[in-house]
Image (cartoon, rainbow, N blue to C red; front, side, top):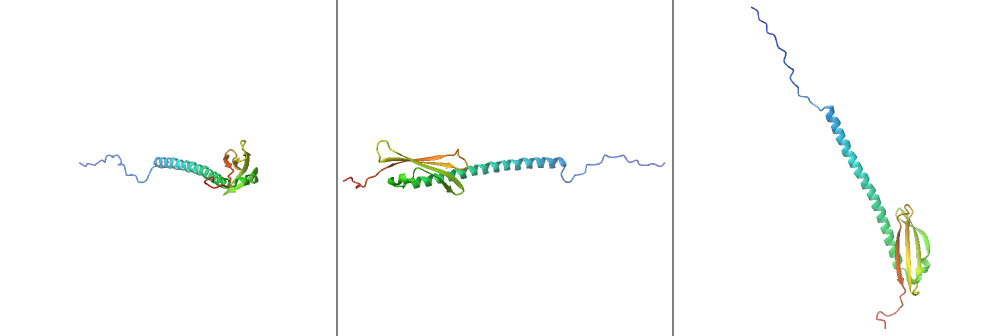
Amino acid sequence: MLTTHVRQAQPAGRRERRGISLVEVVCAMTLLAFVIGSLGLLAAKNAARARLLDAASARTFVLTQQSNRFSVLPYDSIPAYAPRLDTVTSGRFKYLRRVTYTQSVTGSEYRTVKVLLLPVADTTKRDSLLFQRAKTYARSPLFT
């Protein structure tokens, strides 16, 4: 008797797949886009803040410069500098400077000097300085 072996079909074994699937690529690209977008937004906010701080530091510099200028100005020279409207350039910023003074009501020995700084680029960011100057008389420090 002749016997034949019939081979039974066995399920194909799962081969180990090399590489990555399309779903993994899409997930990775989505995550990458989210992270890079967040970093871009953070960099844009940081740059805007740096621009504001640059303008504020330039404004502070101009205020300090004008404060130093008018604080050493002799009392008798105040009418020569005020009233005046001129342009001050500091670095890349331009300001309109308006200088006015008022004589004191109590006597002529007091003058109030007001310096108004108005940026040309943004006129809502105005700053001002007030000085009250008194006339000094040449006397000895001991008043003798």
